[in-house]
Image (cartoon, rainbow, N blue to C red; front, side):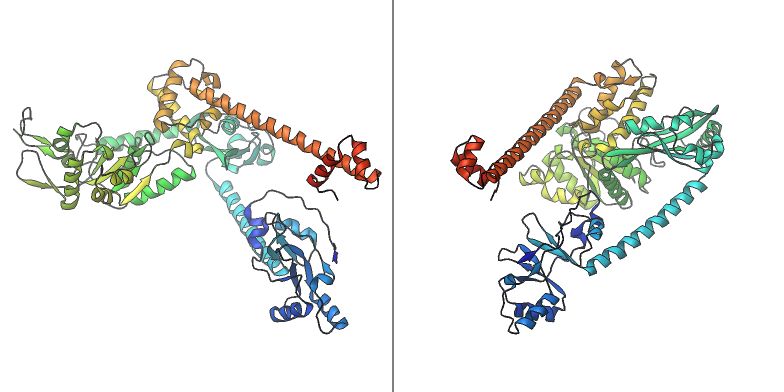
Length: 604
């Protein structure tokens, strides 16, 4: 006999994994089969010192909970303990699922709670021990969060810069003391109001909609030009707010800093060639890696580590992902004293490969320059030589490059004396070199020589969160390039651009921005202004969503119809006292059809 002692309906709520039952449950509960005897149960409880034990059937499905008190009561009646567990009262507490929340279990006030799957099979158990563990860890985390909030509040209030934070609706939820002093509006007056009511000429509410960050923007606040940053706040794939920061007291302060930089530059400036050995070329802008997504942040981290060593680096990734940008970034971050020399292996004719890389002596061949010519390796002395499209290098040159890597010396074409190589090699390719090694089109020993540090640059479709940042940066760059007024994307356009697959990656994105800027007259770029391929894909996605919604509605209607049909059958059977022939007549269907539907809906 089974008594349902508790039947509490639980409403599942979405939360993070920390609160889910499966994180806290005992995954190895002690169970006993309902076909075993009371005496066997008593022995197990004595050995394990349990007060309650799970009872399962032969299919490992939950039957109920057997308490020590129940066993003791049965043994007093029958000292042999030969009764089967299935013949004695077993209490069935409300079971829980692994995805349920621990916070909901508190309401159930049960001593022990079995954890079961959809087929009612035992997965674990929640006992007072697990509950106590959950309470202890939760309180610890709450305390840490309180401390973090206090620290953050202190930082906000003591910050020299003005800081304002808005939610997804543009409502101010934070307004620090520095901003309050500048505007003359107290924190209490500002919080809860729309940002446009508090800060002059703000676009912080627009940043929330477009997800495009703006850095170093001039904003006139109370008659004074200020430099501000506007940064969107992401939660997963959604923008939930934005932070606005006043970085300087005013534009005049920037001019002073700029004049100081210019003076320092004039004092330190030294004339040199593009491949000067004495000075490291300042190409910080061309080596700037844009993006804050998890994917690109990990690649940046590896690049920073690589910059601290002199090891050979192999950068892989699809065409247009910015492999050379990462190579330049490594050069900028390294302690290298020499220049960055780039070589496109796919653009050099096979006959000229050796002379381009290693140089040639005067008279080495017809048309050779007087005095000869330095090769790329010589030009990269104490610096970095970047071998782009290394997969396009001919096998004969692969052999010579391998020898250079091993011996650290090379010889000019037509020369007799060797010279030392003192340049770090960074190679890049969009090809699968491992596959090329298997096909004997790329030397295996060279591959392992190059692939000491591997950096794989993810395609743009794998880092969609970075697209607004890239749009903002390159839109500004292209507008400046063509001396055009600054433009902006509206939210629908940004959404379409973020959902586009970008097979050509960042290179395709830049070309698209350049096309839009040159062809669109209006200041704001809308969905209609985007290239046809992007609009077409957006429309297709919209149609797919509509189809899914329609399917869902049909399924819902079908489900409702089946429920009504089941209720009608139950009513007919009840009205006829269980007579299926009369019930079928009442429903207007054949008796065989009724039997099929009774089986379908599990009506007994």
